[in-house]
Image (cartoon, rainbow, N blue to C red; front, side, top):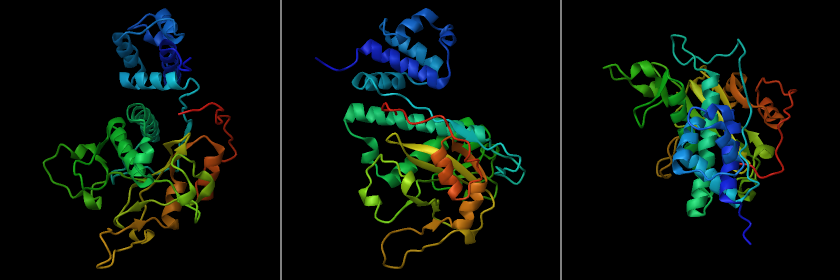
Length: 335
């Protein structure tokens, strides 16, 4: 006998999980579908049509593929459950999230939303890749590429959520996000030197203790082995730096913190220039302790989890680590 969950029941569980994660009630579906029918779908008592899948997905604010992907994943493992991270935003009046000389500031709410959406996309990419190719996506792309991957997704989501910022139209330009008002001008701007503001985005999963890297598996959390948190670039002129921190959480790469500074100077970065004849490596610039401390003190978003609060506090984040979250890891497998 197959241990797979009935497909209608799996769809019902997927629908209910996403609805809960989105904070949507059954009554919110009334514009497109009867509330009683939604209840029956969630209990696995009705079989949804493709049209129904599209309708409920529109209310959930997701693509139908996300709902179907979670459905088939739950069908294979009925204990699988979506997990939504609770974040804390820095609303202190001492924060400095300015990205232009005219005092424009980005919103921590937009950063939080973009992090949540990035994590959701990472989850569904993993589900789809596993279902179609039977391979763990994040084993196919190594850790370094994973950081770039989720950072690029975040930039796209931030450009969508923060209407005052736009993705830099130059593929080789910096910063990653520019003030949207410059997109419709006839002037040509040199974005490499940040003359008109913007936000540069870098990701980090932290430095590990010596000898740990080779013994750790893809998907294994790194929090207990972190010795430093740095962000890397290719020049020392980096400023307006939004540093994202990620770790493997429930087996998946997950954005867990955002830190920012617009007060960085070139001497706060190391600058390793490749030697002539020494290969094709480009120059590497890494944040020093002073740069990290500026960013940590000006934190944007962190998770409401005691262990990560303690980690960030260790490196200068002035968050209240006494707030212990009641949100703990579930005994059931989560994604």
